[in-house]
Structures are given as structure tokens and as C-alpha cells.
Length: 91
Image 1 (tube, one colour):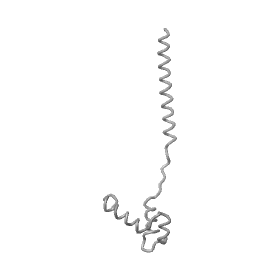
Image 2 (cartoon, rainbow, N blue to C red):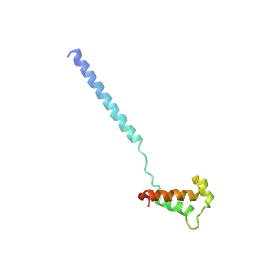
Image 3 (spheres, one colour):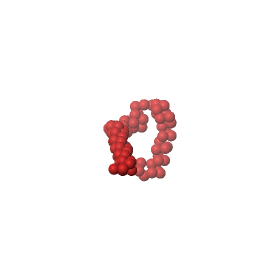
Image 4 (cartoon, rainbow, N blue to C red):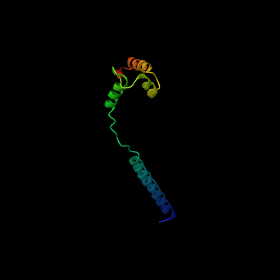
């Protein structure tokens, strides 16, 4: 074997090591970034929100809605109605 053969072999070995390192890091980072799925019971939360602020006799008075959502209940309902009128998905 001559020097160029060893050089080619060294180059191939470096490439192999670089690829192996990249794949190893990629596998570790993808498993590290996985998040646990949490069931947040969105339908129950929606019902609770309705009962708290929009029911016939709401749990909280209107000024609590303003404190929590930084807008009046009437403004929220105007935005709600405009979105429903513009986008059928929200009906």
C-alpha cells in the first residue's frame, strides 16, 4: 500500500466516523425532545368556561371576565360573532 491508499482510507474512516456521530446525535436529540402527551380535557374545559362566564346564572360576575381576559364580555361576544360569521369552521 502506498501513501495515497492510506490517505484514502483515512478519509473514508473520517467520513464514516462523522456520519456515525451525526446519526448518534440525531437519535439522542430526537428522543430528548419528545414530549409527554397530556390529556387536557378540552371539552370539559369549554363547558366549565361556559358555566363560569356565559351561563344564564354565571359563577363569576362580569368584572371577573374583564380581569381574566382583559376585555369586556360584550367585546368578546362581538369578536365571537364576527369570527363565526366569517369562518364556517367555528359554527
